[in-house]
Amino acid sequence: MKILVITDIEGVNSVLDFNAWCHPAGKYYSLGCRFLTEEVNAVVEGFLQADEKADILVWDGHGEGAIDPQTFHPGASLQKGAPFWPDFGEGFDAVAFVGQHAKAGTRHGHLAHTQTSEAKDFRINGVSLGEFGQQVYAMAERGAVPLFASGDLALTQEAKALCPAIRTVAVKEGLNDALPEEIATDRIFSAESAAIHYPRKKVLAELRKTAFEAVQAWKKDPAPFVFALPEGPFVAEAEYRRSGKRTAEMFGELPPRKIHTKEHSSVISVLREFYRREWKQPDGVFSIPTEE
Figure 1 (tube, rainbow, N blue to C red):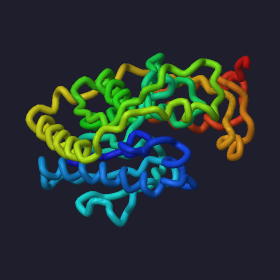
Figure 2 (figure 1 turned 180 degrees about the vertical axis):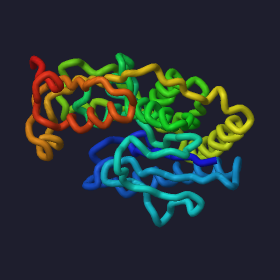
Figure 3 (figure 1 turned 90 degrees about the vertical axis):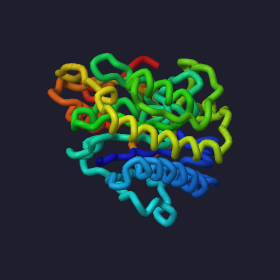
Figure 4 (figure 1 turned 60 degrees about the horizontal axis):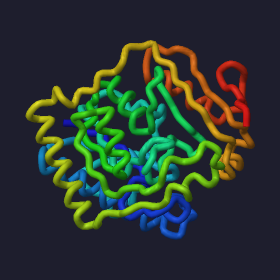
């Protein structure tokens, strides 16, 4: 059994806010990386307890990197970067998610966003998807089933709604209401920081146990885990707020805008086009400035 584990940091237990915990310049970033690595290790242990021959690849999916290689589980491989995200290639039986957050605009989502705080919503063929959903679509196209996901409670609800058979662990729960439409980009993460973080010892035990149960259930009957992609062609579209301070420093000031791709025969190719366009200046019909 070959399993791809995709990680992020915003959905990790005891990662309390974005500025101090999720950015390399943050006061507690190294501690956040340690917490993420502990959660990944617990999930890897559960997978290996269920199948000692499992081939596990962990993809460090958070920005500059958030896995601590020194304490990373010796029974799994570690990858940073991907030549053609979100295409991780053929051969994976299953995909799992650790430290994942809910999609942009989610009520009670803790540090919820879709790739960036500028994004209001992202859709493929009209279906609203966050980072979790996009990668489920892409991996399903390569033949991998969504097996396991951990993150805040809102993320686990999002995962179950899209993939009913997936096994999930909630490690915390956000307390914020839905964000007001007019909120400035640079205020979003602070407005989404209120949360209850579950007891860490229990969280790690539950991650290990549920990962074990997920593999056992898949080995017994893989059929319920299979994710049926909708029929193509595929079109991606999204709405973005005005660029925030961090992204303006990297890509220049961008206005509120909409992005709309051409039709593609595959999910992976439509995502590639979309993310080539994400931070480019508006260019006619495929990236349209909106009213303030």
